[in-house]
Image (cartoon, rainbow, N blue to C red; front, side):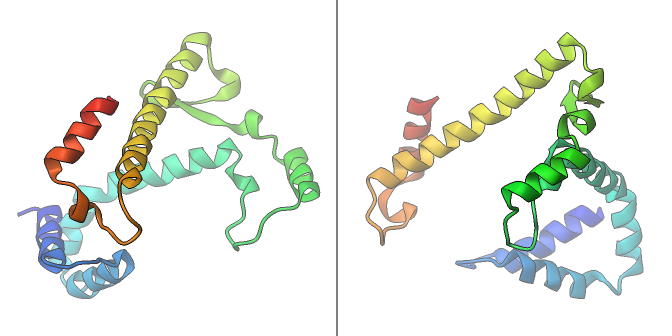
Length: 165
């Protein structure tokens, strides 16, 4: 059995019947359950290190899109601070955009790269907007104390989803 399947089985056991799940607590529990298992760790790295590198590289590339203007301390940045950072870090000069099968520096992109990148972003955005419309449509008929399960069946939700598509 792969490490992923083993981990998924463990997660399914932990989640089974739970009304709520804390992802940080679940992650901590997984560390406790698997950290001493060297065979699991080796299989896990062999199966997932490439994806982890991919995701971290993707995050690094995303940081070129002006996200260095954000703060993680919970505070905001002042307009003057933003202007000062913008002068030091011109976002569009360092921006890498996904287009097709690669990330390309914005300043190196050709017309077809820009159009493909725009198509990809539109596709992702359209799906998110449709889901937001579904959530709003479901919420419209609910009281503040009802859950989705109190008000709707899966068939009801599928019918609303089909109408929105």
